[in-house]
Image (cartoon, rainbow, N blue to C red):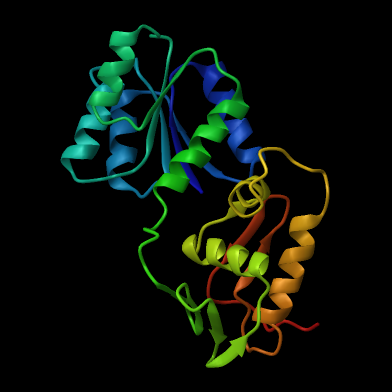
Length: 231
């Protein structure tokens, strides 16, 4: 996940960037509004963490307004020392997706980012998902890879569906536990690794390229490309 952090307080910026990098994300920090506006509008970001008050002539709300005027729907979380209701409402009405008051725990910020990304994921109205030669039919619960049927257990089907809906994105173990197992805590087991291994054997074994990739220390990603799986 590519994250832009626009924050002028050095300690706060370091705190946020360090936590995001430890979670396996790519982070670009920016310490003023003018540069923040340039980065926010000129590149693709999965999420922007934005201070409400910034030095210079460009503040956080101006950055959001410009983003929305350009039609960019990048999720934005405001982090601010301005905590009264009017300030929070003005931030959300300006186009922010969430508002987090300082000081905050990084775990809460990360949870809010994950919630935003879940809401921004592709619509669940589609009845068929496809990545490369892998096809999943939600109506018949049928899965095919290269026109060959793949028999999956219900949990494996849900796991594959989630990965396919997030094609190309790194999904963390926390995201999988919440979405597929409905856990709101880490059971401290290797349940995800075991299920991914079984799914990978069914999806990738015997094919020229792998679709399910491990992102070491973070989670998994489903995307075309990769060497053949030798099991």
